[in-house]
Amino acid sequence: MPAAPPPAELLRFATCGSVDDGKSTLIGRLLYDSKSVLADQMAHVEEVSERRGAAAPDLALLTDGLRAEREQGITIDVAYRAFATPRRRFIIADCPGHVQYTRNMVTGSSTADLSLVLVDARYGVVDQTRRHAAIAALLRVPHLAVGINKMDLVDWDEGVFERTASAMRDVATRLGLADVTCIPISALAGDNVVERSAAMPWYEGPTLLHHLEHVPLAPRGAAAEARFPHVARGRVLGA
Image 1: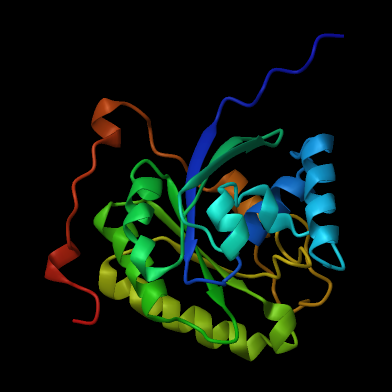
Image 2: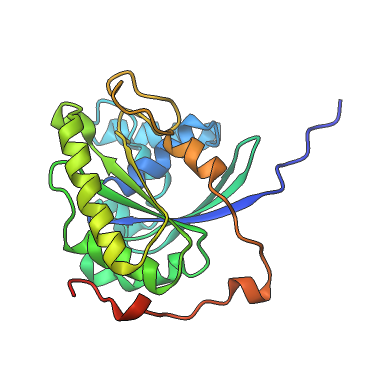
């Protein structure tokens, strides 16, 4: 029987957020849980993780490809990865979180259909979160998804999620970002990334992957893809 043709739809999305918010771990989790990791890649991740004394495979290693990144435990360059589900194909741009590499987010977001901003649930919306949301607005990225990560470290508290989501929506409103979806997740454990979380029964929205599979896509083409930095109605961050 011939193999099924790959899905036609392609979603490009950029992951960003402050340092240590879990971007690389989240991308690794998406790749791993969607069965998009080759056996030899996973074997290498397991070997390196064991050598470092980790109790479980460090899925961030699937995206942190530069030697300097591996040695420092940070993301410096934009790392691109591709995977597919029966519904869509995806190209991920894993953008750096450190302030000095913020410019790299422009590269990762310049062709993105969606920006995925991660927020550490323990600390909420910080300056770097606002910067990344502002860049998404300037580049006219059509959709903003906010992964409120590390919910396992705040005891899966619904109140923490709601306060952080409200703060993020306020930032998005000031920037003129109309389409904002907030999702409580734990990238490390996989909660609400691909599979729904039993630890957060109060959340009734989509998982992250379900949202990525169903977010509307604008028509592609030279005219549709042209983007020019702008500030909606003169609004700037903090104004």
